[in-house]
Length: 334
Image (cartoon, rainbow, N blue to C red; front, side):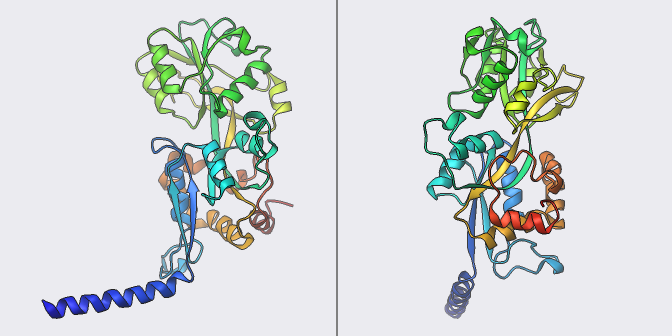
């Protein structure tokens, strides 16, 4: 037993020496995501695995990792777009996910960043997938259009949220303001509870479908999804370029068998201009290699929507120079 302990100790010491040597080539890269029950967190985990390639890993061409040599990436649960951007600005995160509109406001010091210092070092790595704007109404509310919200009880989401600002833009696009409705400022699950109890006519939500709070509500209460389009309200898309057309497929929510046209904002991967150009170049290259494609397709429903062809859609902030270099080499950017 004593000899076994000695041998184990020697092996451990040798592993420490090897680890110390490898550590010289190691780098750590954090990705701020969202709550563990949302979409950001599992997507962050997939991307962290895709871009990681710790020292000692098998080479990509021999069935090993196809990530950045020496990089160890991790996805961290966080409070979402605003929290991630603040953490990037403060240096406590290397990167994170954000709605495209929130990233644009942060960079320009407008929207929900009005009156706060602009995050002028914020840079984009890639647009990932669309986050759909949901307008959920009780089926017996008599609401068939955004314009019908006048005089109704409508939850706009919490103060400081991206959804709240988007909801205001949409109301304005249809000729309404908050003064025209009876506004409340609740999280989607709280708004859904109120609607189930008959105390709420409608609520806005921005996020990937299917959204858990809406799915649960639709299974217990008759609801309708209301269309939001640039054809009906062209000023929205003229003034706010980060919006794009989207469709919530029929059958996504109980009682809604038909496709519903809406708008979306991109879920984007952002970082700081302070991150090294070569590092972000290699991360972007790893993001779009064939091995990552397999991980995304198999790993999450939204993973299939993350494509190189849409990597630059709706990006309203500058690309990081490393990402820009990759997209130019790949012929995706002139």
